[in-house]
Amino acid sequence: MKIELYIAQLLYRYQCVTVPGFGAFLTEIQSAQLNESTNSFSPPKKMIAFNANLKNNDGLLANHIASAEKTSYEYAVSAIQYEVFNWKKALEENELFSIKNVGDLRLNADKNIVFTPYDQTNYLISSFGLAPFVSPLVKREIFEKELEAIEDKAPIALVPETRTANPYLKYAAIFVLGLGLAGSVGYPMYQNQIASETILVETAVQKQVQNKIQQATFFIESPVPAVTLSVKSTTETKMPYHIMAGVYREEKNANKTLRILNRLGYDAKRIAPNKNGFFPVLYGSYSTIAEAEKAKQEIQEKHNPEAWILIESL
Image (cartoon, rainbow, N blue to C red):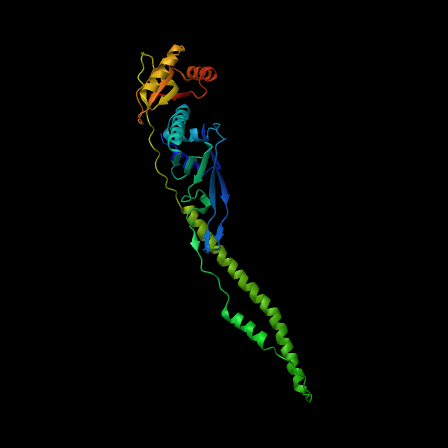
């Protein structure tokens, strides 16, 4: 079972998605960004990070898989454990592993996981349909600079002049003063009217954008069908719960482990190679999950802390 699709689905809805036994993918909302060098604007988005220390199973991913695959919670947990085992193998052999639509995982010199997220997918639902865009550079009008240059070069000098008094000039001055007062009152009223009309237009545009976003539908790929592992039982009683001792690339290593476990008293056995050509070895098989859990705890305490349960599809 490929769990990458289910991780991507949960990143749209939750801030933290934990993969039990491996780590957690965390999201943080980043506001819109302006790149001054390119005059480009980027919409708000979710930034994805990875924390290898958060490994405890919170039930979120397993419940989501069980609901999508219409299977049991225990089977979903077992499928996650099997997928995590393959991830760790890929990291050890190739030092690089990619999770579709999420990011790349690689090992550094200290064998620590370094995560590089993908930028193609924006998991912030409120930014659906918004794409980066480039705006032309805003330039000041040339005539303003020319006017400042003229004022600097040719200052106006006022020269007092004696002339005869004219009675009509007094009334003209009163008229001009009245025009000035009317302008000082009328201009702010005109500015307020323009601001009100601008707010109305912006409100209408925002409503149209919200309607478009609410009408948008997410199309996510159909869930990948579950991988069914068949295990042949050596007895007539169904024993679908198996405790895994290890999966080996070479058959001789699997046989060696099988002999060691048999000498230690375990009812160990081998099953057919999986789809990747690896050879699984079992500590034993059990008819109920309670028996398997009890045996797993004893094995983890006495022999192998990494032992886990594989549930056979009935």
